[in-house]
Length: 203
Image (cartoon, rainbow, N blue to C red):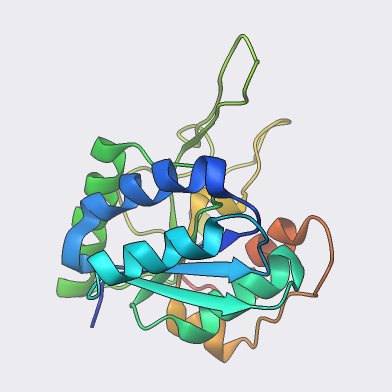
């Protein structure tokens, strides 16, 4: 079984998705990359198929009619076989060192006495044309490098919040809580982030 399933929702993402996929391939056989082609009309489908053919044990290309970002995430969850699940949008990418550190930590957790329902990491907003990057760090409101529960969490100051980019859920928890994101709806990232939270016991 794979350690981590990563869903990449794609719609006319040809210009960005290769950088995204290449950054995720660093995870090797520990990772399952699910490229969900959500009704694209550019070369996205062909790129997805090419990666699946080149890396058949790592990449799976899934094609569907356009259902929006939420339905693409739903498809990723339905097809995920990894112990944990993450969404990486096709115009995003991951830092190699941080990615490898996360995979190493997840592996240590599943081999130890405690598994976690939710893994939280820092992330960076790097918008095109913006003069400054926005770094989302949780060191002042969440314990670092340890398993913790709800009673161990401090107050989140203004401007600090959990988002899809920072959250890796246990796949079975997403299945058990019946998460189903709406089709053709904006900002489903918030539903993905917060709907499963009442089912989380440790992080």
